[in-house]
Length: 195
Image (cartoon, rainbow, N blue to C red; front, side):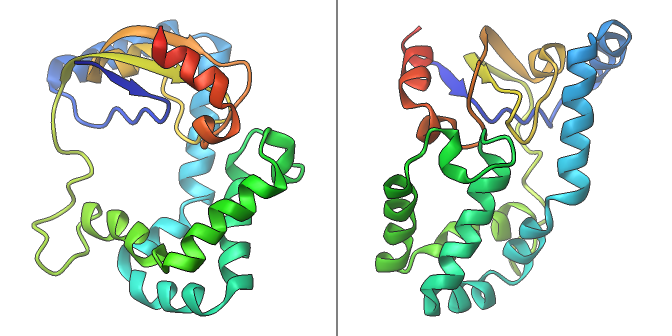
């Protein structure tokens, strides 16, 4: 049994893990600091979608299920912002226009955008029966973990931070790919999983 991540969010640590992270800050490279700065920018300016999906998912879902243009715009904004396309159109990331339209069509024909929002509603603690956020639950992950790290991913922890939360056995720095790594660069993703 093993775990493979390209979206690595090391949130839950004991005091020893937090101490290791704090000491590791002293030895971070300029590339790691740039990744932290980029992550902080994302958390400050690019997470409004989490708020609406986490608090009023059904309102948004009805609007997007009722409007194919709205649904396409919602997805295109994410593909453009979160893919490795250097600010260009989403298809510059390795995705074809057909890939994007097929992805959006699945949401349109199945009307499943609302169920995709439930993750935010339930894990951020806004569900009426929730006992608070479960986003940081868990503790250290002892399962052998492989991380495919990309400069264009949304959350980019330095390796020492990931190692404080996961049993990291493989760390690959991707040459290309963003948040939708398996969709953008499927061959590279599969090659890393097989390693």
